[in-house]
Length: 69
Image (cartoon, rainbow, N blue to C red; front, side, top):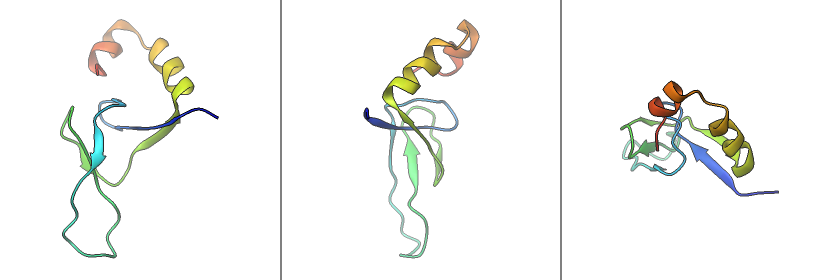
């Protein structure tokens, strides 16, 4: 089994999603922030590294520019 990546659901970047500080209390879901596009939320996409590479390889040039790392 390969390395698991957290993917931003907005820009599809695999290198910029990190935990965001949550000051609302201990019952709130963990929040994440994307340094690439500014997304903040509790949802992210989780993929194996090989699966993510196949996903990136199948993007058209226009989509590649939209989801640039």
